[in-house]
Length: 289
Image 1 (tube, helix red, strand yellow):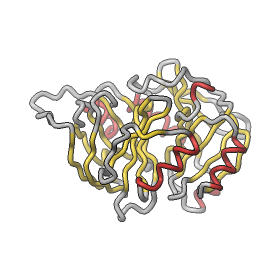
Image 2 (image 1 turned 30 degrees about the horizontal axis):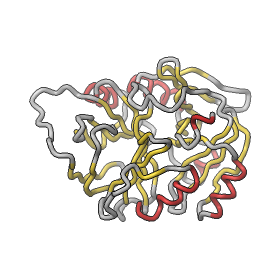
Image 3 (image 1 turned 90 degrees about the vertical axis):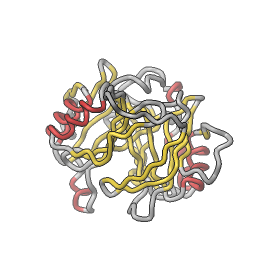
């Protein structure tokens, strides 16, 4: 696990229909879905090839009663759960699920000071290779935080899990900022619009062909909420909701003839989808996506 510290090491979907979700993502992303249930927990593990990527579980009844909806949660690997939990409190975050032993390791579900939910894990039982493979099909290739104020939230993650700004000279006026860990750029942060009710994390799954994957989303009962949209590096993205309402995104190539590709290193964008709205100017390094 040492090589994974500070990286997202696991992803978990809490859903209202475990079997349907497994079938949907198996078709859309190409994951194999394997039952890993125990006597007290219905659980499925999804794999990209032979690499475990994440898990699917039922949204707890207590959460449903409190109004929780299906969602993806990313787990960041750490080395000392209790110390990090105390640090989160000192930094102004919140502990939503206290450190506890689970089927995937010792975990805690937390929120940053602006309310975006994520999780921490140590002793992950489903081992992965060393960080890398962000471009491999079926893996999570990008992590995006829609923050209340991205200029104020970064120090929290920097101190907690060691993330660094991918571009030291980033202009504070830019609304999108990429971040890295151990020299690897893994995601970006932006300031959400006031119409967004809650800061959140969005995870981008790699697919071989974005056009074909978008068709599979529709065929499986999900919704494409935005896209396909082309980024300056030639990567295409779509932002989606699965049949149970959980938000996710896809990224990959799309060999669409006749499409005019932008030549600038900047792309202006504005989007409203699934209760999430964002607008601004995104500056990308072509080698990062």
